[in-house]
Length: 260
Image (cartoon, rainbow, N blue to C red; front, side):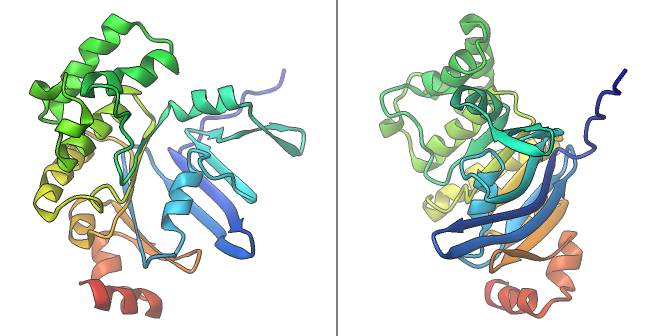
């Protein structure tokens, strides 16, 4: 009898990932692991590959080489012998429904209320019971401080409120990991704090989070591991104290000199 493969000890496992857009090689062989319940924050200059790496974690970007696994499962592919075969669109959507993604520009459906935005994917992608999902969605709106906005459309919400709805929408999928792509970059400065406070709460609750951000002070406060990327590679990673206070690589030191 063939032994079943053991589940990975990693929530996210990236091995040798390359990605090019035409002649521009954006990821040049990235290795990264994230353990369950950890908060990993990715920082680095514009164009370093941060968002492309994040989008590869749920197959929004197909990698050219290497593998991505979430909770031990290959993302976007299945292995047959020594070859990888891409999953069908339906299978990819089902897989994505286990990986929460919060975009910098909210990406809410404008024709749906806050509540409807949250319940849509659990019902359509996960085939869950509507009544059960609605109860959970209302609890999630309360959790992000928007219980009174359930029936408001996105156009009636501030940017910070829209982003909090987007976080509730990601949580409604009961995801194994939640990915945040610059979650505060589209917000007016006075609205940033309300979104960061929701993310702090998720971290305190032990959620597995991977966050691309330019908020280095927030990274120091929330991260278990900070990853510094530049020119398509992970240059250095460590605890916030190690990476922000005692970086070893010259590229890291030069970047931090500009942002700290």
